[in-house]
Length: 75
Image (cartoon, rainbow, N blue to C red; front, side, top):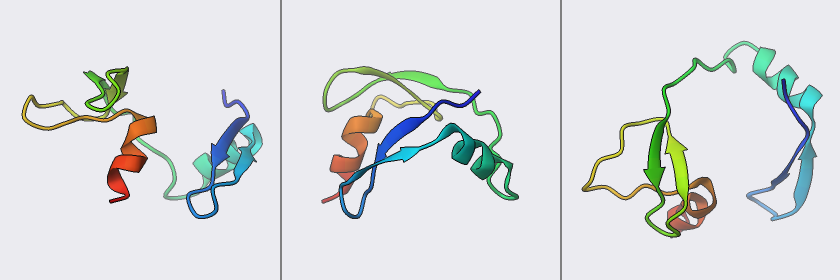
């Protein structure tokens, strides 16, 4: 179900392994289970890449892919 993933730390910028077993353990903890949300297709306002978001996009609001969202929120 889960696969090992490399993530980047927001604080120090170092890459680290988020193992499949760690993902499974986090999901099984109380309060960490997520309901399945409907995903909606969108186009990133910054890079033009296709993405999916858990809300209905609106024409008057920009939508960002995962890669562009973090830098956009840092200012």
